[in-house]
Length: 393
Ligand code: FAD
Image 1 (tube, protein in one colour):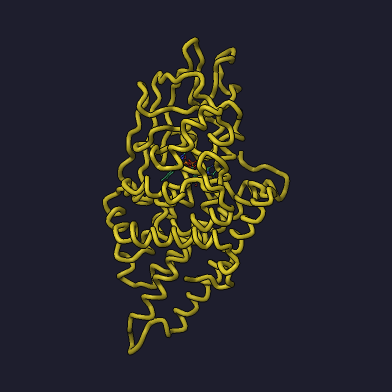
Image 2 (tube, helix red, strand yellow):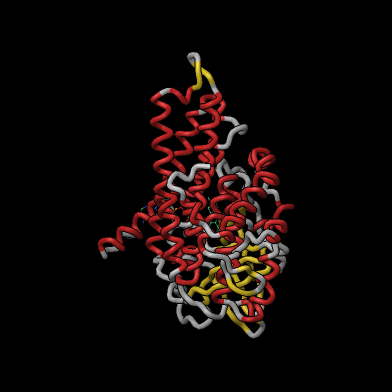
């Protein structure tokens, strides 16, 4: 496997074990069928509990049965999952970074007891409802409302593009708590997180069909029509956009690592193919034009890998800033998208089939480039950090 400057040699024994466990799981359980799942637009849901048993959901958290592994181990895990398919990594990212993390960071003791072990073991599935039909890149404009009465909260609104929603038992829904707001405008109402069980009356989770990217992942909408939840389902310890944004930082960290895995798989596939495939009397890997592509691909993957490793150190030291995560998400996903395209072309006509991974990775990267903050939005985050001037509006 491409690891040009030997970063994996520095992994601890536990980190290597986690990498090897994930690699073996992917090779034995997922890779053989992933092209079929992709073609059919399905996720291998039967593997969800096994992924839990193997510790793939938020293993970097402390307590509640979580092994509290290093940030590097978590990163390497995301890398191995996405080397197979972004849908697999998305499942683990959403469950761990977007559902377990906010419950762990902002939840009550009862919420943690109820949900963290079940989610960690893959007995329950979670989803994260932030995006709305009219509010994507600017989630602070959200319109979903929660209003408290004597029996709890009543939620109304719609979320869309929600990974796992149709198979989820619980949704972390971000909504405006309009309980204490006077007047007509909800804009000043605080944003809070609500744990919404998907089998409650007034909650619907329809699947979004017809995706041409991230096909081996279940995506849906969440409809909230006078959906009632008990008052104790609100996440007590956070208010405002820092709630959802802090979750996104965790997930984006995993994406920065995962994208390296997808690009590495494209490189390996192209290298195997080009060493094997003969044209003009010998393997096509001997042509200088092709070797230029290998050299560039390996260099881009290695520099992205270095950024991911540095992020892990900063995160472990508690020094990681969200803007640094933005840089890595932005760079590493663009890199993976670019290199997947190069790998695809290096496979000629066979490269457009499901028999090889690059076209699938390339297509997945269109989603990864867009979700968790589009490439443009991360550019603006960096622009503001570097100049002190915000340019969002
Ligand atoms: P828009 O915000 O409408 O943007 C359209 C284009 O305009 C983009 O290119 C964008 O970069 C650009 N743009 C917008 N604002 C600016 C600006 N100020 N300056 C310059 N350019 C700008 N969301 C969840 O909450 N939970 C999930 O689990 C989830 N999973 C997803 C899974 C998939 C498969 C997909 C495709 C999306 C998912 N999302 C999820 C939603 C995702 O986060 C949003 O699609 C994303 O934030 C972009 O929002 P949008 O699609 O509304 O695009």
